[in-house]
Length: 232
Image: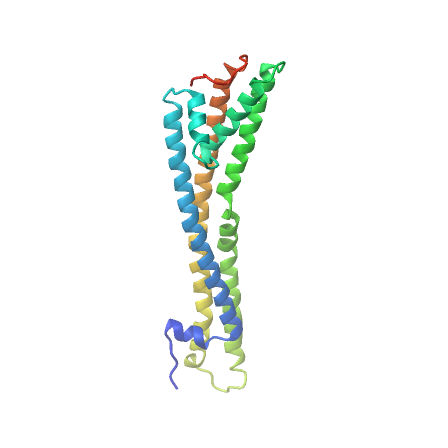
C-alpha cells in the first residue's frame, strides 16, 4: 500500500490535532507577513518624511511659514513634522499670553513635543510585539504538532508484532511538517522584528535630537511675546 509523500499529501493525511496546529501556523505566517509588509512601508515613509522635513527646517526658513505650510495641508501631521507642529503651536499659544515666564513657555513647548514624540513612537511600534510573539512561539507550536504526530505513529504500532521503518515513516513525516511550518512562520517574524525594532529605535533617537535642537532655537525667542517671525 503506497502513501502520498508529497507536502500536500502529508498535510491531508495528518491527524486532526496536527492539521489544526498547521492551520494555526499558516494563519500566524499570513498575519506575520501582513505586518512585515505594512511596517516596512510605514517605516520607509517615516524616514523619508523626516528627511524631507529636516531638509526644509534646517534650510533656514521662517518657522511660522513652515508651521503654516504644515497646518494648511488639511491632514494631521505625523513623524518629525508632527513633533514640530505640536511644539511650535504650544510655544505660540503660551508666548501670546501676558505674564508667563519664558521658562514656562519653553517648558510647555517641550512637553507638547514630548507627547507628540511618544505618540509617534507608539504608532511606529504598533504590532511589533505581535511579530515577537509569532517568532518566539511558532517553533514550540510546531514542535507540539510534531510530538503529537510521532506519538500517534508509535501508538499505532502497539498491536503490530513486526514494525518496520516503512510503517512509521509516513506518520513521522507528517509530524515533521508541523515543525517545518513552525520555523517557516518564526524565522521571517524574528528577522523582521529585529530589523524594525532597530529602525524604530533610530527614528526615536532622531526625534529626541530634533526636539532638543528645536528647544534650543525656541529658547532664544522665549522672552518675546510673539512666536511668529522666528527663524531657524
